[in-house]
Length: 604
Image (cartoon, rainbow, N blue to C red):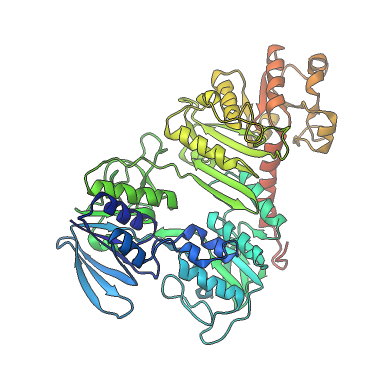
């Protein structure tokens, strides 16, 4: 059997090497348009920032090493320009010589990846992108002032003025506040550049909800990054970027010796269309659960292909070559899984690619942000019921030196108690908890089941009640009705309906910052410390209206809610306590303030 693979990075090369491990007789040809194969594209921002010092460390394999170890015919700088599915052939252009040839196949695997999105604005031809090694070379050259001319990864964009040596960059604009954007911004700061991060949405890191994402934004700002949300680049000059709001209103000019477009990517479906394969509503190559396209003997894997959506709501319209809803998740972990799976399918070893949940993590100046599954915004958009749970535990025992606080969020189906998604932000231990939660979701555990997980514990690594267990305790209390909660963004509505807000923390904590209550004398919650609640409740807390209690993170609030419930009050606990309310209102204010930035004040 002859298998031709188009694309030699994560999914394509995983497929090629797995095929060889399973079949010594297979003929395997890999055609890659770029200069490198099997490189660590997730490490590119860190090489640009000097964190990874050795460029060669990014190059995991070469055509020569793959030929020697796996007997794979790998051809770089060879672009596939046509597919004849009936004849089972592809047309290939050697980019070095310009010569074209025809390659036959028994099975064709399309792994072309995705193309960077560059906004259509005047002057944007000088923006750089970051998808491969050649791209990062251009960025490093621009930072160091060693570049003269070149083209972007789409083969067309000029990166500097041809023939003119550019001075070292002192300022940069990063367009896009997603995972890659914040990584690039951080690494450009490491290189000493003055960095502005421009994001059209009203927050960075769209997979997170605003009360979680605001912590990342504040971390960026604390390290000197000028974060401009609800903003776009309307024009690029030689060394500056003009900004505007979504409706085109001017929002100032910022210095921009270097511009990196990190908005996101679009699946590269050109060859799939040429082959006659179906493309999904969101642009990916439609594949079934075994990565087959709608064309016989043609498969698609990696960023270009759709993924089965593990969390699609019941009754969703199908969007695959089979009968299940799909999604697009351009992540390296999934790409490598695709490559392994398609090799097994081609050789008849297994079927049924597991649906995807989109687990992701990013580091920002020592802060970790991670997520899996749905966020609250998407659940609201889908019209799905859910429970939200916020906690703020330490990553290990509080009495052990070095304990730092995390923010965790769990989203739960109120009918089935199944986990719909989770998010975490903190200095340490976040990735561990999100990985546990992703595994629980994959295994079909309910949120309440988290309470009984047996997780590794020692003071330096966790707590006797691990943060994951604590999420399970809260979920079980809500499931059984033992506690009722209210979210930070729902508080004003309850107050407008007559609820009394009670802060059960100490007077000192209350004085350092408390929940603001609109329409109440003094504008803050009533302060009745938990240890005095039994004695003071009857005299100070009205009994004829709902009561919302809050503490710092929610735990004392739960105790207060249980006490007042048993005293006859109608009680809700403010989920996640004061810290979650504070983060949520900061996110709202940050989005509002950025909308009001005067056009003549780029640093505001």
